[in-house]
Amino acid sequence: MDKLRRVLSGRDENEEQGLTAQVLDASTLSYSTRVKWFVICFASGILCSILGTALLFLPNGIKLFAVFYTLGNIAALASTCFLMGPLKQLKRMFEKTRLIATIVMLLCLVLTLCAAFWWNKKLLAIIFCILQFLAMTWYSISYIPFASTI
Image (cartoon, rainbow, N blue to C red; front, top):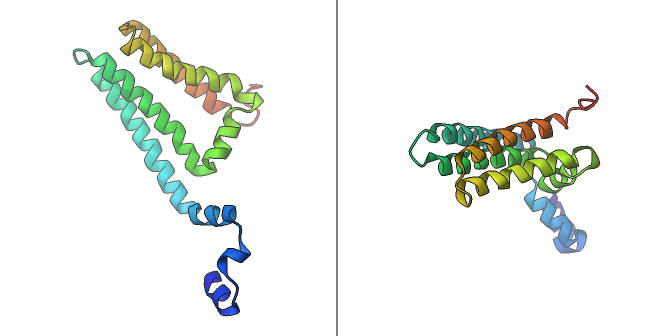
């Protein structure tokens, strides 16, 4: 409708809005689309984590376990980008109140893969996955107001 008004009034679309405003308008998702993709991304993250846990019991399954469990956590973390946007998510991740939780979580993601692929230590990879779970829980709780005081 706005485009029709601009055309009828004789104003060029590029004169009214800058390049940044045009890009933001073109990439904005509706609320329902954001929620749908959040659920899809979060559910796929949970599915990957469960699949990784099931693959742990296969021969040489530690590598698959580490990859799928880590991908599941990354997908669950990325799902929140649909709710608040990627830049806002990154800014909030590195706020003073959750900086340590973010660093521990990201470090555990990397160390899990290192333990499985480069160091070939099954027990260490499992320990890092447990720490990954605890770090993600700590990180998630940091978004709850006044949770750190409890």
